[in-house]
Amino acid sequence: MVVSVLEEMRIRSLGVIDDAVVELSPGFTAVTGETGAGKTMVVTSLGLLLGGRADPALVRIGAKSAVVEGRISVSPDAPAALRAEEAGAELDEGTLLISRTVSAEGRSRAHLGGRSVPVGMLAELADELVAVHGQTDQQGLLRPARQREALDRYAGDAVSGPHAKYAAAYRRLRAVSAGLDELTTRARERAQEADLLRFGLDEVAAVEPRAGEDVELAAEAERLGHAEALASAASVAHAALAGNPEDPEVVDATTLVAGAGRALDAVRSHDPALAALADRIGEISILLGDVAGELAGYADNLDADPLRLAAVEERRAALTQLTRKYGENIAAVLAWAEQGAARLTELDGDDDRIGELTAERDALRDELSGLAQALTDARTEAAARFAEAVTEELASLAMPHARVSFAIRQTEDPDGVEVGGRPVAYGPYGVDEVELLLAPHPGAPPRPIAKGASGGELSRVMLAVEVVFAGTDPVPTYLFDEVDAGVGGKAAVEIGRRLAKLAKSAQVVVVTHLPQVAAFADRQLLVEKTNDGTVTRSGVTVLEGEDRVRELSRMLAGQENSETARAHAEELLATARADG
Image (cartoon, rainbow, N blue to C red; front, side, top):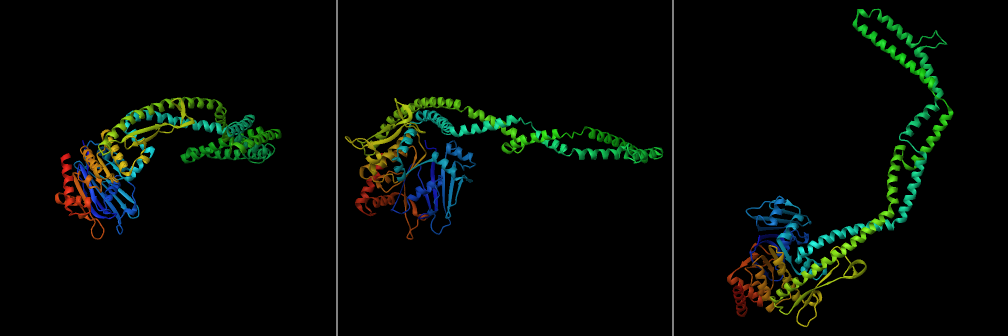
């Protein structure tokens, strides 16, 4: 059941197209026209709608920007519809509107369901909506990596399940091996680092610094270095506050304040304000007495011992040696020592760590060997089914004697993992090298399709692969650009017939130059240029009746009015209708 249909595209200022509307059929739509008329712009436009690369060279000369708008009918519960709604897009009665604008300066904007979205959002929807195939895709199918991807895609959970486990083990093995390499290759550097740390920690331990000790010693050294001046100042201040027994005539501050207090006490009862001042003077008197007492004690307790000063300076020198090397103060030195001890423990444990990592690496390699074998077994089983299915499809595409098979090989590598009793190279996708082989006729040895298939055969192999995928991993819309290149005659008729069959379960759009293919389409669109070399709104038309016969005649013989070509065209249409 088709869950989405690309109903219409409007293309403006793209390549040779000035302004044109492409109306597509839910079934099989063939796009035809003269060479250079702009048929391929249909593929390019759809590519832009689905997040393809924006090339400013596509913008029509003289235009500020190229715009492609598409209307897709989507079932509300389809994955594409749900993903679009998550992005904030709105569906209009089951219709999803997509637009893409490319400026002549190369800037690109995308809109989905009336909302501006990143271009990458359109690319995410592409996997759910459309499978696009053209000549470049055929070339891609020649690469072994793409062939492995195709096989894995066909196998589905049978391969994806084992591969997920394999990939997790592979990533862990890479991480463990990297850590082990780092430990072993940098062993000398790490040993040197450990020696330096050990020397520094021994220096700190020998001094045994205490937190805040440097600040305390600096204050004590300052005090001891100025002991005489401090004692003299304290004595003078004490005499000024409490008096000097050796000079009783000098009036001290305590005596003066006491006299002021007595004077006020005599009259304080007459005015509360004056009483408050008398209380404050009393407080001052008490404070002066306390300070005078502390000054006397300070002078008596002041240590002017030069031996103590020498010991303090010696200790400060030892601490300074540490702060020069390991931190700006003793607090920083102690922090360095704590971190250094932790790092030294780590470095001293390298041998143990190397042993642990080596054991884990060996265990992971053993695990990876088993997972790789399971992955190979799953691919081998799927390859047989895939090859058989593609071979059956080729029989329907005028290649009845062709045989497709897969070669699944491994490359020996002494540093690899053991699979099948021998060490083989491994990577993120397993140990398998997958290659698609084709024997085009009986007696011909299977050869890689890059070497054993002609252009026409390659087109049919690719179509057969896609038809097989349609039965196992379908997408709503298939777009083929010149997939029938290098094909003619009966093979072209069979390709048209097979595309028509595929269109019964999906939307199929084909850009073709072959009348045998176009005749099987449910709708045929003609792309025509005007006299000035552009394709306008009237340049993309739906062909029906006589107009379609005329276009098929042109495609057959290059002559629209050739009676022989017309007869052949009508015969092709009749054959297609009979098959339908």
